[in-house]
Amino acid sequence: MSRNVDLSIEFCGIRFDSPFLLAASPCTDDAEMVARAFQAGWAGAVLKTTSVEDTPVDLVYPMIVGLDHEDKRIFGLGNIDLISHHHIDVIEERIRTLKARFPDKIVAASMMAATRENWTAVARRLSRAGADLIECSFSCPQGTLGSKPGFMLGQDPELAGEVTGWVKEGAGPTPVVIKITPQVADIVEVAQAVKEGGADGICASNTIPSLMGIDLETFEPYPRVDGKSTYSGLSGPAIKPITLRVIAEIARHVGIPITGTGGASDWRDAAEFMLVGARTVQFCTAPMHYGYRIIDHLKDGLERYLRSKGMQAAGELVGRSLTHLVNHEELSRTKKVVSRIDSRLCIKDDLCYLACRDGGHQAIELGEDRIPIMDEEKCVGCGLCLSVCPVPGCLRLEEVSREKAPAEDNSE
Image (spheres, one colour):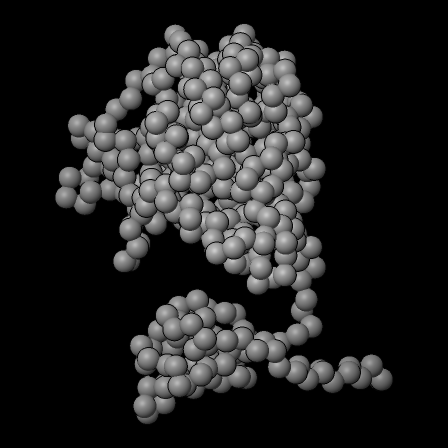
């Protein structure tokens, strides 16, 4: 297909040839793997999180377990992985090698540390090695640096802002992006703190601490490591709605460039991330599931979508949905919608009837031929029936006129 749409985009002053890059993950923990990803067409990659040479990395296996839902494999992916077992000296050499081989690709490096000295030193070394961008993991336990044992650095706005300054001190001219956690009461407060600390951008956001499931025969949680387990970081499609909200909140209230990650599986997800404010989108679970070649689908799908909307560049998407987001009290109460059924498409599975009867407003009855019949007096347009119907277009919401209530008679 000839390209007449510009997929390139700028983030933190850096030009990406498309909005799509690999997140810090097992996908980016080997130089030749990253090279293959660049050859496949990815715009950039964030190398898996590293630290100073004496940082202990005590990995255990198995470390990954999938969350399946009905017939969908890996609806979510849980991991108990830690940072890369490759320390900063190895990552420095990888940055130099990859930039020499792929000068037009973006090589970013993810880092973490436990002391001010190490945050500054690692950032300085990554910058001098030629990293295009430094991403800082504030969303994993940071040793004893957190305000409480076991807490994430990103859960403490004041400390997060302070540590951002330490990293900027070492990074010099290299842009610094802070990867935050959604596990906070006020994501805007944290984002504002790291912005004030000097961050050039924010990565929103990260995996969700989760318990992936229990074996009902042995009572052991997943993933099982010699009969024991621990909490996992949940990624994949299951967390997409959380990520969308985090990106939107930061974009609405904090003026800072955002790279979105957490739950994007295809070009549609990426477009949604961009519509609420992300400039680039990072992928992890999807390439781990389907391989690097999904980049062809991502690029082709986004290009076709942009063309269908009459847009000439990917950047035109960024933030266009934000004006449609309001607080709950600002939503209209003046219009009434009801559900309408296209009987020609109905497969008579009864799902809309059951859902409305036991979870809605008892507005659907079944005719003699099991075709649903809608009682528009009872229907309030909640949308539950559309959510459970497996047939696209069989159910839809339509606006209907709302009769004005009679005026009160205040005469005595």
